[in-house]
View 1: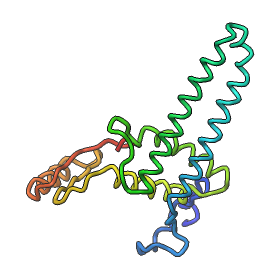
View 2: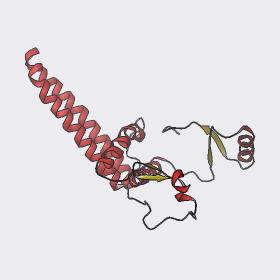
View 3: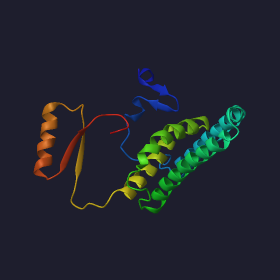
View 4: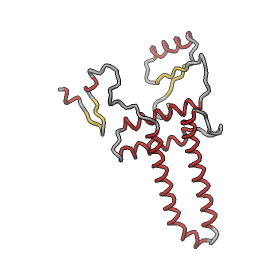
Length: 193
């Protein structure tokens, strides 16, 4: 019966193996450093840059046929955009490493992170790393970014509630938040939450 409840999803096992878990972290738990994510994201960026360079190599003769000056103009645009992306990635890494927000106000770290997280997970999976291990590294890196970007606020608490709560429970929590002078917000699921 227990074997029927056990399912395997990739490198993870879901089912009754958690039945006797006491809540502690095992010795082989996943407390990965953020460097794993940075390394995987850097490999992804390098592969992306190599792909763009290959694309450039393929279209270069066509651009020359159109106008002999066009390759230089388009090449400068490519190099400029790629340089800005690499600089942006460097500023994100610097923010996480130093604990200070190095990004200018209009730039947000999650913009690039939305692209790097799936890339890092995919590369990690191809290298045989578990999703939990890579995920732990992503969380550690994202926590460092969040701490770097946020200003310390004493005595302010935000309670985030999922939409799936039943109405009476939601109302109870909202009342408790008001009495405790806490801000409350209901959030949807997905990566934006």
